[in-house]
Image (cartoon, rainbow, N blue to C red; front, side):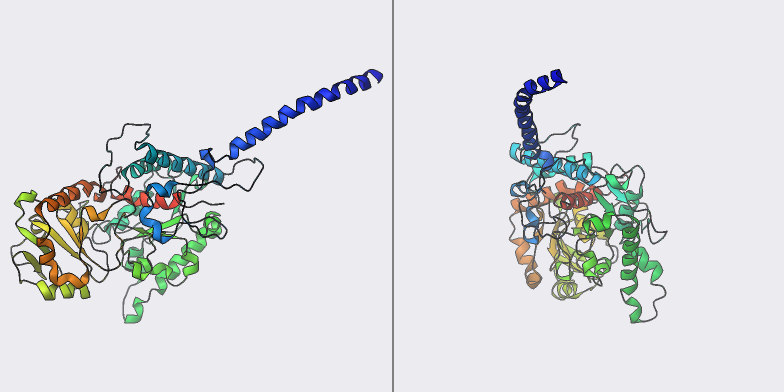
Length: 476
């Protein structure tokens, strides 16, 4: 006992001495773990203002056009914990997103990209808001992004949509998300960055809204009740909707009624990402949360319009439009220009023997007015024909505007200047037209539909828009 006491009394001062560097080392490790230089603990890809409830959420709508600008990717780190704990699946997902944000910021600073494979396409040029950011963001999406498609629900309302016609892109997108070979498909919900609700608004209307016997049968109540019930099922069965308030969940619809799913219960859908063709900001489309989807008309057996565009030097028609008097903008267009001018060819019905797509291919500019709703496949048809789109719409949020600079490959004419269309288009110098047309050809790949989807095609552009919104969301 004496020896034990003696040794203890002798060793105690040395134990204190050894304890000091040990404590210092621990403090250093903690500092390095939480320092802002550690990319694994970064904030969302934004230095913009955020609204807070139980989660950190999205940037303000005024800054959505700069989602891919240099300033968007600046950040500052804030940490309220002083202890290291075992990471949850959500922690791992957020760390993964932080690494993606850091890679995008680095690409902006270095004006280059980093990829672990050979890149077959490198986006460059002023058709992109920031091509360095977009390219690296797409690389990170391909490498990391995982989506859980909920399996609840039955055909034909869920897991299936129209594969051709006016709403064909809706069904094609749902089918791509359901494909077991889809590289974005999560194996388990706890590894997913985002969650897809695979119901088809077009099919709900086609099957549930039959028969239509009176005007009251057009009430959106049945559609809204269906969407609300589906969310209730997945929110009750899984923890993910309630964890984020729906902010990492999305649906896709090209039907005119798509935006109406949320109008009866705005609180339920306030964070929910709606991927919509009918992207009308005056009717509740929120650019900072929702996604504008390109409207692609699909005929049987085809994945897009035919390509009959002539060389720019052989295009003899200044401007072209053919279509019904659907909505006041088209009525105004037809009133001023219907069958009145050889240069600005506007028809309600095509003359016998004329071919719609061939006429687009012979035209320098293709007029794209709103119909009953803002969305129309006419913009994509113009792009496929190598015809510069002339957008005549109010309150339309153009597809993929986070990435694409539409002013570089299209012309926008306010509705109030419809009577001046010819003067405006004739005033565009030929050199400028040639640049616009060349850029139209350049962006065509982003509106092409492939099955399975290919990098940078229209499905990947839709997914990239969702990916951007997930990057700008940080769950606590």
